[in-house]
Length: 106
Image (cartoon, rainbow, N blue to C red; front, side):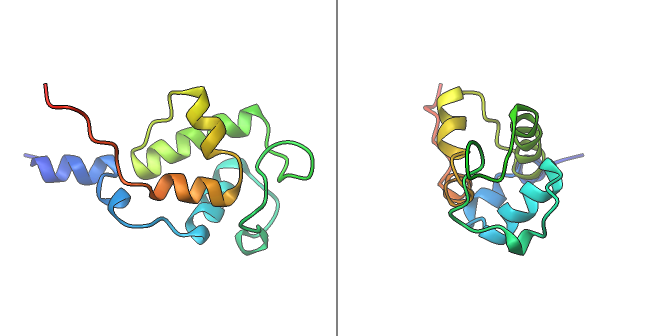
């Protein structure tokens, strides 16, 4: 039988208590978006979308969203949040490392 702590661990809650490194974000991008570069070749300030970027498209955005949910238990459901988080490699790292939002008790 699973305990509440097991459920929290599986949801990625404990991952959010520590900072996600740039290397982890680079690896996440390469693995989920099938980039043809090595993770260490990706600069922190690299844009994810648009001119002069890593060249991600809408399919990559979907794959990255699923990868984040699987790896860290974080669902991105708001388009504005996705735009903010998916601006650059560094912005994604900072967004993933932020403290979990507290939800009011019912």
